[in-house]
Length: 421
Image 1: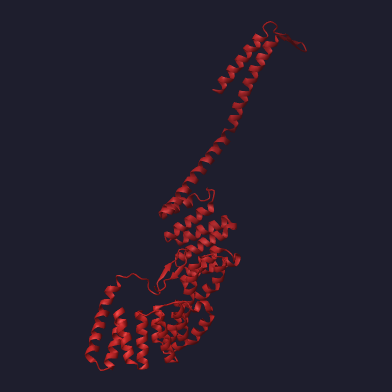
Image 2 (image 1 turned 30 degrees about the vertical axis):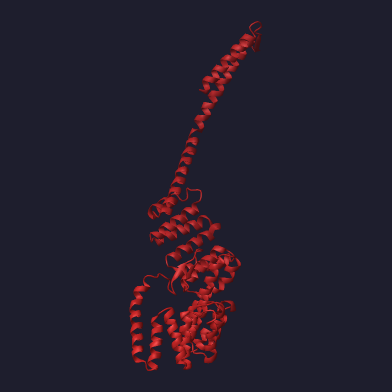
């Protein structure tokens, strides 16, 4: 098409020259040695124009012929690159959809042909992990590290994440600890360490990185507080078998944390188990006076303090804010029994039963009536408490509250122990 347009233009140009020079076509004579050529100027210009056009096209065809292999190879290379990009994109889609086998095949076969081979190898490693192919997973991670030494942190983080999800916690910890030495301020590394230490139950190590987590604002204040309270509570639980270790762990806890319900409960339960409950009696009262907790109030009635009169009076003071609380009434009933004031104890226990009938309250009231000589009434309460205890499991099935030691995952990805509701 271009050649036809060029020929038409050349023809029109020749006609224009001929019309312009029809009255005076001009004259040209070329003499070279014994050779002489004579022609009109119009003819020479026309022939020159046509010859130039022909020569230009001949040269173009020759150059195109010479370059054709290079053009073919370039086209073929572009085609392969486009095909690889499409395969990698499809591999990422398969990975997101959970088609692990297909994703690994697409990403591994076309990894180095893509624009981001490191991401392709990391995707293939994730797919291999899901297929329980540890050897292939490690191979892909090794290839990714070799291709991009500068991106070794990304590769190592992915490796630690995969090791963690595969239950290889010690290996993951080693990898993350080495990473932190090279990049101590990296937020992702700190977050992964927090998650890992929570899974491993390494509470001392978790406590050590809490200041960095708080300083970097890596977690929300809500999640960070829960994580901190859980770490100290679990630390006390681990030390609960030995009084010396328990007291040492308690003194390590910041004062603001000691008044947290979960932490104080763990400490007080351990002390009661060692017969040292009196050490936490005053602290429990201070907490109850500011922030009510049924669990702490229940424990307050079990603790045998050094001063029973003071303990009883403190419990009575709490009635100003919790007049109808069945747990506080049960606690006061127990303390009244220990003081020998059986009439008052009966009043408290009967009021607690009226507010919220519980098997334990029935048992305490039955024991009190038995001590007072009211055998038939005592037997009735024993029978009532027993029937309530038998029916309790069926009722409990209707309430899906997390257990004390249950582990849940927070919105920021850190595993947290569910707190009693």
